[in-house]
Amino acid sequence: MNVKNQTQRAFAVALLFLVSTFMLPVKTNFAEAATLDEINGQIDKVSKGLDAKKGEVQTIQNQIDIIDGQTGKLQLEMQGTQEEIDRTTAQINSLKKKIVETETELKKQQKILSEYLRVIYEESNTSPMEEIASTDNFSDFVDKTEYLQTMQAKIKEAVNKVRKMKADLDTKKGDLDKKRASLAEMQKKQNLQKKSLDSQRALKDSLLAKANADAAGLQGKLNDLFVQKAAMSAQYGEAFVGGGSGYPYGSPPAGGLIDTPDPWGYLIGECTSYVAWKRASIGRPVPRAMGNARDWAGMAGGGPAPGAVAVFPYVGYYGHVAYVEAVYGNGTILISEYNWTPYSYSARVINPYNYGIVYIN
View (cartoon, one colour):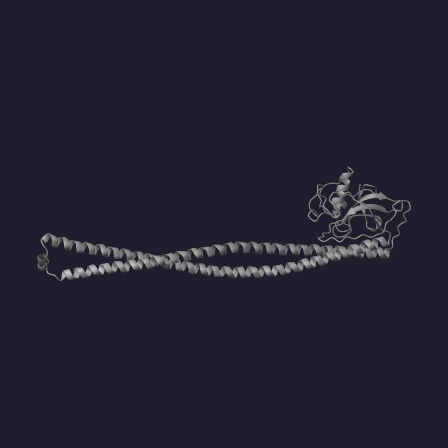
């Protein structure tokens, strides 16, 4: 029976039957059988509800994984934006320093130029004759005049160069200011996106918690139904029999093994895996990967016999399979099985007619 269960509830019905000639004939109480059918119907319904709820849990978890992926990507983008803002700010600060230095240099060059212009102005107010007279010879007059003109030209060139440098720095600073403003706007939008994703994550966390709680409630209800079913079966002639299985994965298997693939094409801890192992151990393997237990009915043929597979096609949503250990004269059979009680081994004496059992020999 392929009923999923994350929490195990150990239970047993302490009723030992003698599986020999001393066994009492089984009498079917149809009122109780009808009640058992009702419980089977409830198990079927709850099992479907539990599967649907687990599907809902998985869907919400997938949505959370998507949100987490988007959040992780956005956080990297936000980190990149902040780093770019920091770099841009550092560049602006460096440019500000250079602009101050350039302005200082410009003032210095302007002062030098002003001084030379003053000298030239004073020289220009002296007549050429006076200038010549004040010098020792005409050659000195020419050299002095050319020197003043050359220096004026060089200083003007230096001033223009510094002015151009400052203009370029101002332009670069203006571009960086715009870039930083654009990055700040981007950062603002990213922060809003992050808040939205955080809000979505909180909502999904709430939905996931509720879905998990609902699933746990359904699982508990399913376990209770199995307890009722086991007790009711004992009331009208069925009994659990003690003993061990030899199934190599434990009873129940470790949580990390449950519902993982086994060597025979089925899932560990399920009834199908146990029967596949049991048949393989006696050299009569069943076909691989026949699906859920109810699907095994398509292979049925023959009657009850030790070593046969008992197929319960109408038990629960997935059906159930068991291994026939013995057949008794009163029509009852001894079976061994897994997952009649969740993910655990059990052996029972049952009336096969209560379940519509068919056999694979």
